Amino acid sequence: MSELARSINEFAQLLTPAKGNDAKLTDWITAVRAADLPHLHSFTNGLELDRAAVDAGLTLPYHNGRTEGVNTRTKRITRQMHGRAGFPLLRQRILLQ
View 1 (cartoon, rainbow, N blue to C red):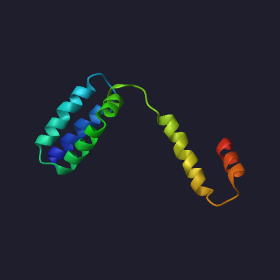
View 2 (view 1 turned 90 degrees about the vertical axis):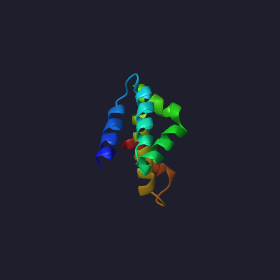
View 3 (view 1 turned 180 degrees about the horizontal axis):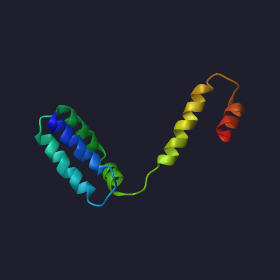
View 4 (view 1 turned 90 degrees about the horizontal axis):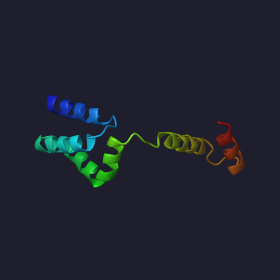
């Protein structure tokens, strides 16, 4: 458990975008793969599938959080409106919120 907690804390420190986090991530993945933590092995395999995007997320200060928030809000309203009134009312609710 202590090894798992240490590994998770080290990864959490990488989530603040900074230069050099891509190299630190490589070191972190190597250390996790050396440990006997199968769930983290699966997680590291997922990170490696799109390593360029992960590196960009850990090193660049840009993000699309605001856009994703709008998308999430729109989907929530759409679910609430399912089967009711139609597109004009849905459009009105989205524009007013």
